[in-house]
Length: 379
Ligand code: CMC
Picture 1 (cartoon, rainbow, N blue to C red):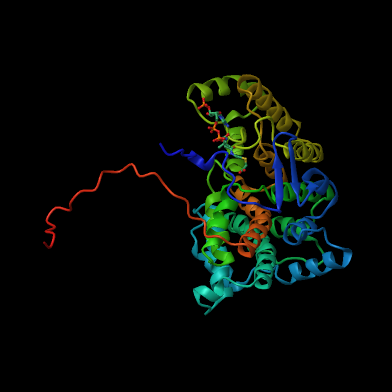
Picture 2 (picture 1 turned 135 degrees about the horizontal axis):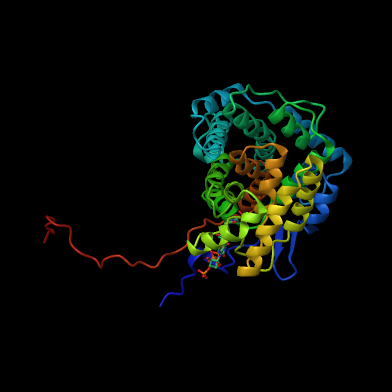
C-alpha cells in the first residue's frame, strides 16, 4: 500500500534559508530574525532587502533600494489599460493577477521561453519592479471600483505611506502608517505555504518569475489561504456586534461552517504573528476611536477558542485593521499580494539557484487497462 500524504501534510520537500516557522517555540524567523522584532523596528523596504539578500540593508543599500522602488512606482499606462479591460465586478485578485501577467508580457517582450527564465541578476531586478509596481495596481483597483481616478505616487513618501496615499489621496497619520507597515512585514513570508510552493513549482520548470508570481496569486486567492482575511470581515459584518457572537457561533457550528481567520496547518497553539498584529489593530482602534471593533474581535476569539481550542491566524486581526484604515474588504487579499511578493520572489530566486524539477508521483485509482471501442489491433 502506497503511503500517501494527502495535502503533503508533514512532508519536507526541500531546504530553504529564507524563513523558519517553528510551531514548538511559536516563532517565525526571516533569515534568522524574529518577525516581531523586524515589525517593531524596520520599514517594509528593509525587510524586502533582507528576504532577497539574506541581510538587512546598510543605510546606503536601503537608500539605493528606495530610489529604485520610487523609479518603478508609477502605474505604467499599458498596465492601466489592461486593468481597465477587467470588469469592475471582477474579483480584485483576478485584476491583480491579470496586471502582473501583463507586466510580465511587457517586460519579457520577444524573449524565448528559454531566455525568459532569466539570470539571477535579472530575477532580482524583476523582483524589485514587481514589489514597486504592486502598490499602484492595488490602490488603483480600489479607486476604480469606487469610480475614482488613479492617484500618482509621491516621491517624498516611503513605501507604506505612499501606498496609503495612492489609495486614499490623503496624507496618512503616522499611527496608520506604522500599523500598515507592520502588517506588510508580517505578511511578507511564511516558508512553504501553498502560494509560495506554487511559485516554486512553476520556477522549477525554468519558467519565468512573472509566470511564477501570477500562479502564486491564483493560489493565494483561495479562502483557505489568503482569501481568509476578506472572509473575516464578511463574518464580522454578519455578526454585527459582540452581543450577537454566541447565537451566531451556535448557528455557524451547527451548520459545520469553518470560521475564517482561525486555524493553521502549521501552528496548532496560536499563530506567532497574531500578537503583533493585534497590537497594531489596538493602536488603530484607539486612533479611530472604534472600541466596538475590538469588543467584537475579542468576543468571537474568546468564544471560539473556548469551544474548539482553535486559535486565530494572522488574517483574523489584519482584516479588521485594514477595514479601519479604510480599505474595502475586497482589497485585503491584494494587499497580501503586495506584501507576499517579497517572500515569493525570494523563494523563486532560491529555487532557481539550486533547481530540481518538482514532479511528484501519484497512486492511480482509475479503471484497469481496457480496450477503446472500435479499435482493432494489428496482428
Ligand atoms: N473553523 C472551524 N473548524 C476548523 C477551523 C475553523 N477555522 N479550522 C480547523 N477546523 C477544524 C476542522 O473542521 C477539522 O475538524 P474535524 O477533525 O472534526 O474534521 C480540524 O479542525 C482540523 O482542520 P483541518 O482543516 O483538517 O486542518 P488543516 O491543517 O488542513 O487546515 C486551515 C488549516 C487553515 C485550512 C483551516 O484551519 C481553515 O480552513 N481555517 C479557516 C481558513 C483560514 O483562516 N485560512 C487562513 C490560514 S493562515 C493565512 C495563510 O497562510 O494564508
